[in-house]
Length: 385
Image (cartoon, rainbow, N blue to C red; front, side, top):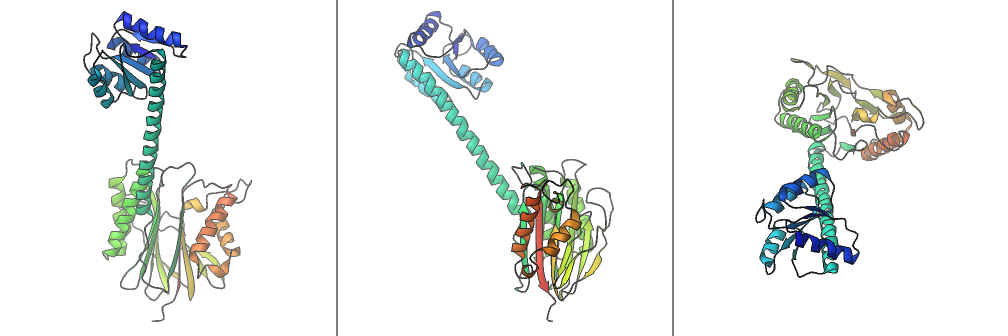
């Protein structure tokens, strides 16, 4: 305990009371605020017992300065006889308790010190819990922004989505996706991945997803969508090294074909009844934020009578091919998993396929993803019209 007391008699009395009580308290004394601040800077204390009447500080100034220097230390104040109001004011200013000189014995002093330390520790726990709650609330808000509810107005179309945060993440990373069924009958999908992990990358992912949704709902020419997303990224990113991979798919109203545009993102996987899974078009341009004045031309992909389109981020394919295997799963491994998986369920239960696929990938990797994983599977068939 640090005792900040200029009166030799009062300081001696505090030490003697604790010694006679056999209290396991080691007392270091400072005779002024300046000396006390110096000891706090040089040593570690559990408690500060402060006389409010110091030669170099008056009123609550000393308490404020000491709390600023050691905010996680318990603070007790000593007040004069019949001066309870000063003690009450000190507690209101952040002290754990106050002691009136001459009105406490050794046991009372010992208990006051122990209780003050315990209360300060309890306050620290409450602050940590509140910080965790705030962090969880922030993560929830980011999750709502990154992983929205798809806009789908056709019962013939089914969608399944999945997301798993990477290892040792307290916040979502930069993976994001979206799906919009527009009034003209076309269906628009997108998925993306901002390089890096953390709140800044997640916030940037939200910006990109919202910008894509705004343009799509506003019926902006699809040729302008990715260039606009690149402008958003370059203005919003916190470092020039930050980039994003994005893939967009536009399915025609008759559901016979899809146009794929890819900014450095892994290709989609096409599922068809009775046919093995196949890869869609590969990247049609570099990631967003790498080169200025880039264009991402569309590549057409024919759709079978009954189809499923799986879009995913690279976290799904970067894990191990099997437990104990140093090789990565890769796109070929993903195709193999889809080829031997429960083929009968993907058309009617896309959510089950996505969840089972992610679980399989995580099991092969030992239970934890190396990176965030996001996936969206849309299933449907050719329009009767």
